[in-house]
Image (cartoon, rainbow, N blue to C red; front, side, top):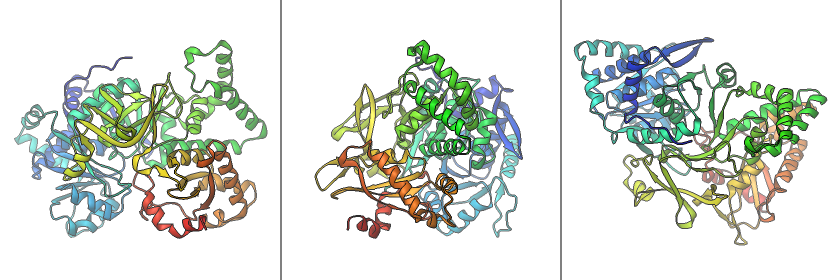
Length: 600
């Protein structure tokens, strides 16, 4: 399938075009108190226009920076589009960030205004306020329960009202601003996860977003009739791709659930045609299925295991190449087992499912493809405006991330570093010329990832800086080892140690939900996360799971000793980033004594 032609319009210009050409078509839906509220393209454009003009009335200049701190909801995209309509720059902030991280992003980005979801996010901004002399206005989407502040924030509704009044005296201003918008103008600042240091503000242009659209649309098979659920943070480039880039360029509808806690219920109601989950989402869905099967009778467990065993050989085989007997086998188990499982996780109508943002175990990938979820792995970065390479549903090579998407050239440079060039490559890091020069060299984006080609598809080995060299001089990829071990439903995190060591060891965090369910069946008494991990039988369970993983690894990469962490890794404790990436250096430092004990 060739990449579709995309109109030479910026994202806000496309929004205006849909409002004129398809005013009554569904654009957005949001679930409030169990009821889905619908917004047409005309509604979407009108609200975004009024919000943007309200910011203009408050004094936002062209090129001014406005931050948004909120979970996904209609107001997030309305604000983002409104900022873009008046030629401002949108800065996303993770709503899970503690106040000091919020302060850093607001300060570093020179945000003049900030849109907060509620009192919780407003409190973070107020705590950071002494460090933010440039911040002029605080706007709150949901003012319910907002305490009385000495400087009361404006409500989202207030800004839209200001915009309506401003439009009466400046009726031509939006069209004038939009008509003068250029592809080279900066649209977004997306902050990197900061797994190895301070987050960097990647500047993404309207041209980058437009260049990303053809590859996305081709990969997802998205058209005006497609349906999707927006739930991953919109301050991450992956959700920008699936909520804004592809849907706005083709005109498909996006739905927003009530909260992250209702994602699985929302999936069942929406039945999306495409879906992106980071590896942790797929691991949780895998664990949920595993728990459900543990709760069923022996016959159903036997039938489930027989279905997996019979259909696993077809997981990566194109359907066009299936023999008649394979079609019969799969259809039998689809009606007996897989259809119910697909309904259980809400993905029965999904024509393509993606995993990205971090490596995933091939076992997890194969499992979902076996049960009929067309899961493929993709690779990209904030700096490449999202997806750079992707597996195709009919050409999956496990352990790879496929080939380059339309409009991007991907190759290997020195030390087999993955490098790429094309219209999606970002404009540089805000206020960080040194990092920009190190990342953008001679027109190529240097990703910092080591790769190799396998059957014509790209395989990610590891981060260049994470490759370990053991005391015996062997080069190892910690990510490969970790993902092999994390295929276990009982293991949530695995942090490998081995640099300059005589053998590989690991810090392991159990998956509390599945481990607790197992403990209940085994009649093991426990009271806390710590008491569960310290139980002798749980230690034996994890040892057995590590042994299974080790069987798939070469001798030199096998985990010889491990330590079970007695608590969940926490963002607030600086152990993981807002995107739940492990901060290795912090973990190594914090658990230094434990690590040394593994080698004593």
